[in-house]
Image 1 (cartoon, helix red, strand yellow):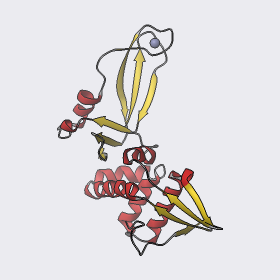
Image 2: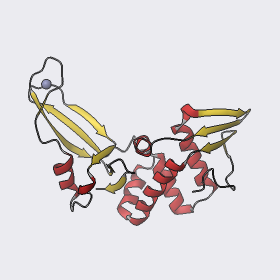
Image 3: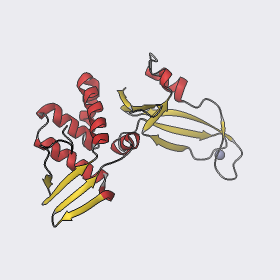
Image 4: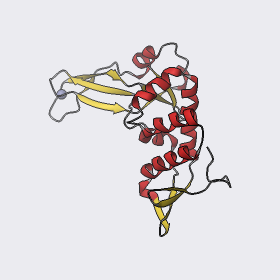
Length: 201
Ligand SMILES: [Zn+2]
């Protein structure tokens, strides 16, 4: 994908306005990583098709795979970037806007996959408190487990919290256990804070 360093990139027009973007390298890197994974793995593509209405990034990737990197893809990318970086839009003319897209790549993945979490963490208190549920968009694991042969083992052996912990609710002295009963279709991992990779179940 051409970014602002390319002389042939023009501002993108939609909704009666013109938008130009700077510092899109993080977004373009994530897009390229997921695009390559999707091209290499038909199961990723299948899952992506089923979730494309929820995740605009999936729609963009499928569009590039089907129609190539054309004007339509740049317009889809512009719509996604405008929404993601709505707080850094600067008006430069009557109908022209400039958007700075600088961001940490891992944080960007959490934004792009808001509606496709990796896993749901559920903590159950032995004292009967309501279960605490947390949707994890990125799973942080150590780089050395990258070549673990089984994804299920990876979750239970390296990510799950096996020890009982004190319930965090005020006034409760019971212990709680945490597990992952619901895994999403797309699992994003961060290894020592490098760009997340993608796997599907
Ligand atoms: Zn409790």
